[in-house]
Each structure stands twice: as C-alpha cells, then as structure tokens.
Length: 380
Image 1 (cartoon, rainbow, N blue to C red):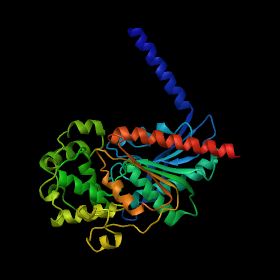
Image 2 (image 1 turned 180 degrees about the horizontal axis):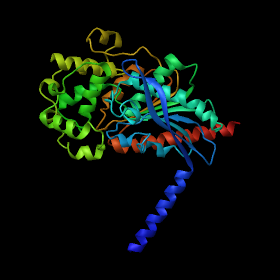
Image 3 (image 1 turned 90 degrees about the horizontal axis):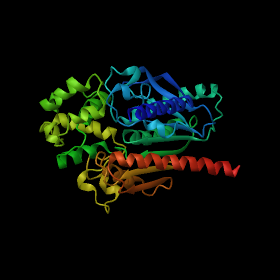
Image 4 (image 1 turned 90 degrees about the vertical axis):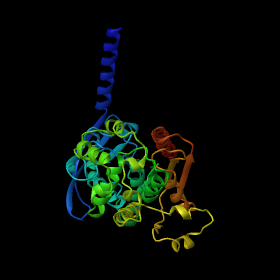
C-alpha cells in the first residue's frame, strides 16, 4: 500500500510539473500611486498559456488574503487555476503585499485598488505584446470574487470614467463583493455576529490607512483582538486558515469594544465615514423599504451613498442569498441602484455559504468565457 501511495504522489508531481510547463509566468514591478498620491512601486504576476493561443485577457483582482505568501507574485491565491490554461491573467498584489509587504494594506479602498490594478494592466500590455501572443484586443475581461468582486466593479467604473480610450473591457464579472462596507458594519453590529473576526483588523487598520484617519486601535480592539493583531497579523506570515482557528468566537462584542460598536461615538463615527467612502453604494438600515424612491432617500439620512456612474459595459453581478461572510445586503443595495441598467445581469440565489458559492461563481464565469469564445469563432 505504501508503494502505491509513493507511485501516486510521483504521478501527481509529474502532472503538476507538466501543468506548470504549459503556463508561462512573470512577476512584474510597476509604477503606481499610494493613498497619498505619492509614487509607489507595486508588484503582481502575469501568466499566459504557452501551448495554445490565449482566448483573451483577464484582469483578476484577488479576494482577501492575510499572509504575504498568498499574494499573486508569491504563491498565488488559487483563483488563477480556473483560467490560466486558456487566458492571459493580470494579477495585482495590492498595496501591502509583495513589493510593499511592509505597508498596511488599505483594505476595501475601492478607488485606490482600481487605480493600482489599472496601472498594472497598462504596464503589462507592452510586455504581453512582446510575447507575440496574438491576443484579441476586444477580449479583456475583469473577474473578481469577494474583495475582488467589489474591486472588479470599482475597476470597471474607473476605466469607463478615465481610461475608456486605453482599455476596452468586454465584460465584468463581480462575485459576492462587499459593495456596501458601511452596511456590512451595520449588520454585524445589529446581530453582534461576525463569521470572520480576522477581518476586523484589516477593515479598521486598512480604512485608517486608506484615508489617513489617525485612529487608535485600542479604541476599537478588545485586548483579545489587540493581542492577535500584534502577535499574529502584523508580520503577514499566517494564512486565513491558521488565523481562523485562533478567532472562532463569532460574537462581535468579543473583539470590538463597546465604543467601537457605537457609530455615534465620535472616533467610531470617523471610522464609519471611511466605510462610506469605501462603499460603492449605501443605504442606511432604516430606509431599505422597496417603495421609498431614491429622491426621498437622499433627504432622509446623511450617510447615503448613491453613485452617479452608469455602467455601459456588460456586467454580471453574482451573490448567494445565504452568504455567511459578505452580507447579501451589499448586493441588494447595489441592485436597488442599478436594477434598471440594461448592461447588468443579476444572478442571486441560494448558492450556499461564501466558500461554496465561490466555486459556483468561478465555474459559471469560466463556462461563459469559453462559450463566448466559441461563439465568436463560429461567426468568423
């Protein structure tokens, strides 16, 4: 039996090696800007199929990571395996990982993340041209899930507003994104529950870094969270799985102080204003009735975010109604704003928890991309 296991491992190693040979990879360092508008050198990974002509280019903003080793330029998040044999992939690390791992990651700052991702795409294009991959110029897609799902919409928004003459997106796929960061906080406080407590430091420290709020973490973190943050998270050496085991108490009040759960507290109110800046769209909890028009909502609360941007590129917005990590309210509020937009397709259903729905999302995206490519070839 032991011999069989050894032979099986050798076969798997051989298959993995062959798979690696079929995919070319290159780490890129590229110029961008940080949250202060200052120049910064960021990193990321590009990959391309070596044995066949690519079917297009995917800009792939990644989901939430904790260890620097999970960044695309290091070991990758695993998302790339869904597409790397057929598509060119552009995978940014984000500020706080890879070349900038010593910096605090400005978590969920959609505007900055979009700029950083677009800068990588622009830097990568001449390199991809030099590889003579014969990539169709009208086959650039944006695909993201979770944090990457929110980033995907911000990227499309930024491209359409500022880079439409340089980047032509064929379709955007946004899966289970925290499009409404403020509503995520509201729901967590309301239910006193959070399934991923390890995201608390990312959200508070990241929002603080994104908007230079100069907050004191002791105002928000309980001693238990303070200890985990300082001892386990600052160095970015532990993965989500390793950190999750240490934070299995899902009561938000175990990790956030009473004042940190009160957005009327002056310090917490400043943090909440940062959440609103990171939200693509937001409606307060007490104004979610479907029969309230947008014009009335604007006069009902100061903390409403209603974007004026109207997408002009096909986009799929996917979200499981029983997602246990990113509240479905994020998708509801986005749908409330864009329900009548003819370019957006909405895919909502009971698709399971956050992790299981991610498998459904990536399978769906891959099927649609391959079908689109097949249809295009048949029309020629």
